[in-house]
Image (cartoon, rainbow, N blue to C red):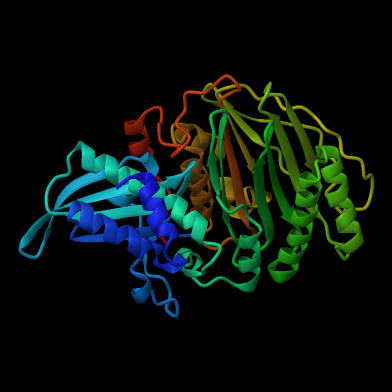
Length: 414
């Protein structure tokens, strides 16, 4: 079974049946006793087992499997498959768990139970199938709510539903020059945090924003802001014009609301940076194991009364740097008990996807699971424009896998 064959067969099926097609092919080709797809939920702290289309009951809450301390957690973090012998009744089987990931976005896991230990060719086939499954999920998730259901291990409020729809479709992205990932934990009464990124031919652009207020009002304000920024960006506007249009939209339609934000553009041709800060907390940069707060000039928030000029500045960003952009929910209330710079150093060998989740988890733990304001992080690893020896398919090759395994997450499953 080739990668192309898997994709072709799944494409011929209905969106909700494509998982069944992949499972059937693996059972026939490898003699698998059972095949499952486990999807990561919104928090990244658990997975949900999706059965066949006929057995997925979307009228019931998704049954979450906490990741912490499980082989599933290790596979997602290291992006390496696991193989272990297990007993099922009177039978002895071999369980294989492979990452289902596309460009650093850890979508979930493929789990198979085989009658015997797989050889190298079987592991290659399993790996290719898992990679194909990532494409299948991405291609089909816009046609069905099954995948969205699988990510909701707790009910979402209306505000949270709006907020999640403002985020990029993939919360992480891997490329030769960089890796970026975002993580957002809504408050008990949702604030207006969002993050976004886009890769163009010659640049990557990132934004983190925080609209004032809570619940639906904040979500609607965030919708206005993100829409204005994306509209300007997609029309080819530079950062200054993107900021101007966002500010104008807030003045015209924001009903006296305002929002803070940061916009970053990095050239993929020469590595130069452009940066706008609209009343937002300063970013953190880790270089050679040392973390410092970058202190650019701060302009007024979008929609705020007062001067309405946004200055485009440069950030000192060098190959090997890790940049963390965050919202004030990472700094408020009990968050002061979390040493973010120290935690950045401890998680430096982790992929930005895992590092962002760990930073968020520490804030959630410090507030006993009840945030007064949204907590949001964007984590960017900048490798430089001359770096081209990275496997961008999974975001897998950590500098030191053993150290990464010892670091782990700090958050207990809620």
